[in-house]
Length: 419
Image (tube, rainbow, N blue to C red):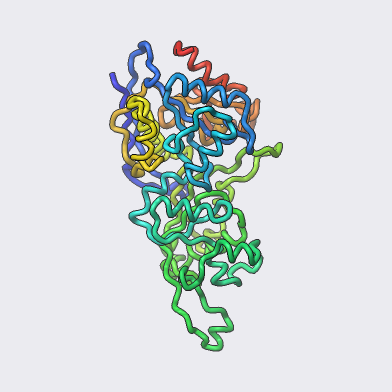
């Protein structure tokens, strides 16, 4: 019997002000038999599983190399981002010292599904990430006009007087106000009737691609737009307190509250940034913010990654990876909510370090899960009061907890007689 995953973008619902994509998943059991390499697949988180900071984690090289040798399909599935898929896999392949580089079609970053939104959102504010990388990523996805908070600051320096950008950064990364069409008259210009420039053009939506590099500026600008009149910077919406609906939609690429770096304690992630935006919007409007959240553990993102894994499996079967990558623009692209009609895999294993994203997302989607101790997760967590008081927010791994990625993956390979 073939395992069929029916994951259909059936409706939207709001939970605590969060727009969630609602799915139904039906995964019939199939009988055990001798497995071939393309009967199983692996999905790896990156930070805390393969890398910690910029350093390779013990066993990561051997794990990826073994899967490549066995021609077992795998993808990288991360809530990180801020750079292009091509640049990210090049960096990871170098850090892991892989003889065979990972293909760009093998990675799903938190913002990779934004590629499916280009037809409905033309002029966007892209938030987060270093330098001007996110603008380049958004343009590569197909967005026509990509604005950054630094563009708004260049056009209106007083919008947040405490911004971190110096003149050289503004000159290097911000586009000219005549091009951005974001200039707002100052108080003194209004008083003197010096209105000798065009009105700002509206922004269609806000997309948070990656962690904020200047929270003060980003928060002020995002709130200004969410409470504006139809996305026009420097205006105030007329019916916010009545409807509670933001002026323009906002998309968060993930909701990770914390993540693991080289520092001994976990650090705030995009989920913490979202809490600040939610709180300020509610303070101003007395309504919960309606927003769309992607990334793990959202089922719509697991479905997107599932498509990419199947696509790469087909690549391995065709034995023509180079041509495949060129034909597919070196990455995977599917519509959000497109269901996987036929799943060719007998088992898919998610390897992660975070019970609140990697593990619970995999479990809810119907994948097997492996938890490692090299990142967010710490021994004793499942016996802690934090877990006991909110157990529904976390997932326990179906395969087990392991010291590192190699131990977990090699157990699966041994159990299935691949090694």
